Amino acid sequence: MGGCFSKPKPGADLPTVELKIEVVLPEKERGKEELSASGKGSPRAYQGNGTARHFHTEERLPTPHPYPSPQDCVEAAVCHVKDLENGQMREVELGWGKVLLVKDNGEFHALGHKCPHYGAPLVKGVLSRGRVRCPWHGACFNISTGDLEDFPGLDSLHKFQVKIEKEKVYVRASKQALQLQRRTKVMAKCISPSAGYSSSTNVLIVGAGAAGLVCAETLRQEGFSDRIVLCTLDRHLPYDRPKLSKSLDTQPEQLALRPKEFFRAYGIEVLTEAQVVTVDVRNKKVVFKDGFKLEYSKLLLAPGSSPRTLSCKGKEMENVFTIRTPEDANRVVRLARGRNVVIVGAGFLGMEVAAYLTEKAHSVSVVELEETPFRRFLGERVGRALMKMFENNRVKFYMQTEVSELRGQEGKLKEVVLKSSKVVRADVCVVGIGAVAATGFLRQSGIGLDSRGFIPVNKMMQTNVPGVFAAGDAVTFPLAWRNNRKVNIPHWQMAHAQGRVAAQNMLAQEAEMSTVPYLWTAMFGKSLRYAGYGEGFDDVIIQGDLEELKFVAFYTKGDEVIAVASMNYDPIVSKVAEVLASGRAIRKREVETGDMSWLTGKGS
View (cartoon, helix red, strand yellow):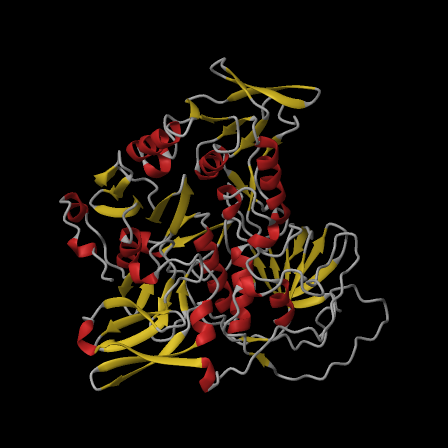
């Protein structure tokens, strides 16, 4: 396997590599926190200036024997066979940690009890159709295997042995697995003799967000052992971007989705600060900004989006930010301490930033064109209830207006002037007014773009060009359960799902997108969850108490429920997502009565 990614010298012989098919069994108990971020070496990274960082090929992720020794295992009777009804889940204690015990169709299953994504207790989730769905963010796990079947997140659950003796249920588990609660699927390694040396790759992935990373991981999970190159404009390995606006002072290494050792172990080459400027589909070649060319056999385009910026006078002033990278977020929080902050835009990003900065800034003001925050997405009533929560936390709103000018002294921001003539003191301005697809580099490529710059794909994530796939925030795709309506859904969870489908179809598996969209936001310690696709809703039916922020809102169009949002009402959003995923329509009259017994999840 090659050492680093560098350009071959003219006439140079490629090193001879003996071909061996090698499969790495990932360390069962490896959690992100277990892998040192300061380990030796660094990821393969082709730098924009043409230099390359090296690493030692003998460095490996620790790989224990896949079968734990008897000393590593613990076994205990956890309940009587009649303690659980069919369709019930229970957390049981094994001494070294907890296990999720599930009874389904008369059979018992034992799995890891926490969702590997953010640690949600799965016992509070939804059991349906042979899988358990996380109550927080909607990830789904197969109860027979523990495998991750729907996103977000990257890892699966451990599956533990169950036996019945004398009417008692016994569970046997590895002590390490009990403590670490996540399992990385077995993956192939790269065995390509030219990896790291040549100017061609089997798979090139443009964009290293959730879609790009999941595509690369899925290929390896499916046994693909040829070369994979993942390139990104970022200086970092793939990271948890949704956290940027929810926790602005989180450091880049804390956001990493996988440690650098992971990319080395599985031969996924990451080119950081690498900008693709043209794609030549006829010759299957891309050109980078510094002139370097790379040929490919299969291409995934997952470039994501670029934040919209203000177009008013003074927009180039210092201390005016969009939040795209960890550096942006860290700088905003540093400059905002004890100062006056103005946030332009009351969508998810703007409101998350406002919530996070209230404890740190002297003042936080939000400027928005609509009458209420989130109005188009969550409706007037829910938007107003959330606005009240913000006002109770000292956030000042300037609604139904926009910025006409930014004023400063010596180039530094001092005031934001609104079209309503109001002048707001501001030391820092954060702009969150949406994003545009980052597809400018494709305009002359022959790859289809729509009028808004999105890349249209089919259910298999294929573009109009054979061998070229696209996924993530920059695509429009047919949404299966909304009559294949072509939609753009820039959610973290959808990007994961699309990355997997693209990888499966690169391998000719004929997979189709069927995921129900699921998103979440967190503000002032409260989480709002949302599932479905509510664009064009004509009514909102609210159960619970909006004032107390303990509610569920059903978004309807005609006679059908097309989306749901909730606060302090788990696991209802996961339950609705599971009903929609099963193909069953939810009628408006079913949610108008207030009787939600049909949606009650079981768990104890």
